[in-house]
Length: 293
Length: 264
Image 1 (cartoon, rainbow over the protein chains, first blue to last red):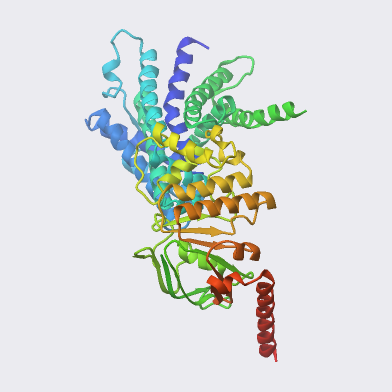
Image 2 (image 1 turned 60 degrees about the vertical axis):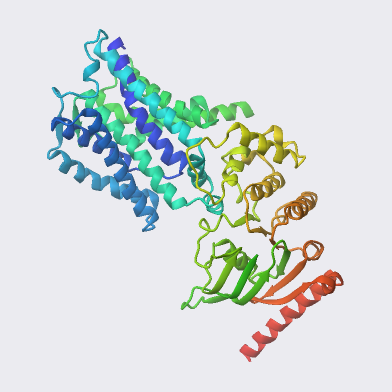
């Protein structure tokens, strides 16, 4: 694997770290299997791309993309909380609806951002090669997001969100409005995923309506790899695990695809992903079994 | 203070499974009084507790806790007035959170929760001191996950959690039923100590007639959604477990007679 390919993998891993943190919030903190992310990732990309092309400041465009993601999350939460639709099904409904919404937002299946000014533009040409600038810039944003989510989850407000996912009956007895926590958590989760989508569009130079397919699997893969390698002790460790899991996942994929020995092609990506996630799920069990015997 | 007036609860209204769980209960419990509640299965004990906690909204009647009318309030809305320990040790705390995080959650029961860190140095110190009073050695395990504790330890921590924030009433829902006899005794003496030290208005549902007579100031027996016995003071002191059992038998006999009439 060349240096450029390696840093490319790190960059993509960092972009998807936002997805991983979002998936962690929904699946692990709230115990809410949320597939909305397959729609909110391309939604973030679409909103950011269209606004940037229209001349809006890329930072503002990315913020609006986050709001759009949060709105998508609120729809899923409402279908579940207000109308009592099973959480998984509620998120699938929002997800397929978003496919049409994303086409409407862009007006066509994909939008190119090649010559537009993005959040990263001011940092190019300052002496660092482009393929270092991108992961560095996104890495800084990931650290900021990770710090904020960590401080939130260890605050009084965050504790009530964690209690909602862990034991809703007890949370209510402690005065926590569990319905509100689901709204808040799923909105926050999808806002982060949409930010990932907005950054994906800006680093890759395009937004595509199909770019969301499998987002949930990639996010879950990162969460599970993180948990397998770093354990689940403490919120901070789990969040760092999400980020590193996301990067390691991309490096592993890159290694698998670029090794001539395995003879894999780019089209084998989904198969490789499924195998990697399975290995990450089975590995801890094997290790435990080994220790017991 | 608790004041229930003419509380009726009907489940499955208008369906073939319609059930009158509470049938016009009126009950006033004075400030600082400790009341024990007994009754056979289906007598309405859990429903009564649910009506007070907010899990069950009364079909008709009025519920007052402290100075407020809470008849229409849900569990979360009245949590600031009601502290509670569940029968199932797993129900009253979060297994996935640490001991001190569970305490932090309980310390702000019924209050607004902001973005300040849940575990500041001062709070940690307070929690440690309160847990040390239990003499279970848990003060050295404050960061451990709650699900590493035994059922009895979890109930002990739940009792501390119930008293961290102020409340108008403490509800105990057969909170020793799932424990071994030794641990049940420990939890009961701890309950006694906490209730008398803090002069809490307490309602304890129990399966044990011994507990019902040994603890508290007043005993209520429920049957068929109604209060059939309400003893306090001297007449309660002379009451024996055997008397209660005899009353239980009599109640059961009565229902049998009723059924016989229906069939006949």
